[in-house]
Structures are given as C-alpha cells and as structure tokens.
Image (cartoon, rainbow, N blue to C red; front, side, top):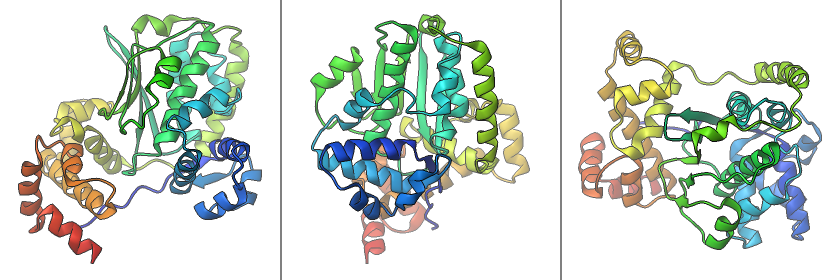
Length: 340
C-alpha cells in the first residue's frame, strides 16, 4: 500500500515577516527560529519570494507554542497592519461590495498560499467563506486562525460596520481562551468542526465597501493576475478530484454529486471523466481513504479513533475492519510496522 505524500506548496513571505515581528516583540531570536524551520533569512528580503508551506507552518506552530498564548493567531490578527495580505488585500479593499471583495479574495488567495483553496458558497440561508488546503497536513492552527480573523477584522474596517458572523468554524480542537474568541468574533465559535469557515447572513454580502476605487481595483487586478500566472499551476484533474474526496471524508463516505459540486462541474461530466480514466467513483473513494489512512497512521499526529472520524467512519471498529481488509494489518499493527 502506497502512502500519500503531502503536496509541496508555498507561502508568500508576508506571513513569515509578520510572525517574526511578533516573535521579536516576545523576546524570541528570529534568526534561531528561521534556522530551526530551515528558512534562509535572505529569502525574506525578496517580496516575491515563496517559502515552503511546511517550513512556514512549523514556524508559526513553534512561535505560538513558545508564546504560551492559546489565542495566538487571534491576537496576531488584531495586531496585524493594514496590507498584511499584500496585493490580494488591496484589490479586495477597492471592490464595490463585501461580496465582491470576498469573491476576489477567493481568486487570488493562492498569492498568499498556493495550497489554499478559498471558496464562497451562498444559498438562501447563509454565505460560507471556507478555507481549505490541498495537502494532508491541515495547516498550522494559529496560522488558520490568523487568516480568518484578519479577514473578519478587515471586512469590518472595509464596510465601516461592527460586522459579526452568524458562526465561525475551525477543524482543529480548541486550545482555550473562549472569552477572547467571544470578544473578537461576537458569535458562536465551533472547534473540531468539518471545515474552517466564516458563516454570514447572505445580506451581508451587499454591504458597500467604503472608499472603494474601481479604477484602482482594475489596475491592481492586472498586477495580481500577472503574479498569479507566475505561480506553479495547481494539480490536474486527478489531483483536484482526490483533494475533493479527502475534503469531504469527515462528513462520511463522499457522494459523487457532492464531489462534483466542490469541483464546480456536473455529476454527469464527472462520471464521464472517471470512465475516461478507466476507474469508478467508489473505487477512487476507497483508494483515497486507503492512502489517507496510511498517511495519518505514519505521521502519528492523530489517535486511531480520530483517524476513523477524519476518514468518515461512524465508529473506530468500522475503520479497523476496513483497514485490515485493505492492508492485511490492523491500524495499530500498521503504525507499529512503520515505526520499526
């Protein structure tokens, strides 16, 4: 059985520079931090440089741990200066409405992190801004919290309102500081959920952006498009399909219509593409579950019960039976074998 390797993705230097400013304020040695994460200091002098995602997330996790602050990402977002998202943010700040700004952000989010998949889903009841990742690491919790909190605070400033989401959801478990989350978000905040998201009332998207300059927005968009074109192209159809299946696994066995929706295609088109690839949807779901289980068991960051949940099984015993059928070993035996 083949274990899946995380997708190699990168960040802009912007969140690294911001983090180091906070680290110095805490009395930490930024040179030592960069060395531990394997990041060359000279890289940060180039505004167009890209830093491996694994190094950036390790750096954020390290500083968050050293700070002893359970709401580290939240507090960094409050301290972040305007423009922390670079050209992405400036294009958004010159959109006509908040909805247009968020849709613009979904297009250019890759300029900040080329492994980020930002999506705005809108129906009659709610508008969900979802933050997803193409790799299996799931991202640094503090970095995810900084990202969504900064978006919320920027939205308040842009609209001149005390905007509060209907709810906010994070995939990782809480580390405490409930009072701080209540103070900043002013809405229910759920940890250990199926995704990362800010959820708004649909009418929120119609809020006008103050001091927006449409002409400047067009000029900035040209610059953003040029930078976007220089990024490595995302994975092809097969990679995106596997990502969509992995993303839906915590909700149970993925259904073809749900995967098609996530890929912005029709179920019929997806079915036809699978036939062209010589496979079936169910076979691919089983393969992705198999690979993802192997990755989680090898990484050892999750307990077996938690892995069962992440793979969409209703209980650990069902995962135990399925994994033994796939691999010939129980999950515990497989983990011990990889550790030896």
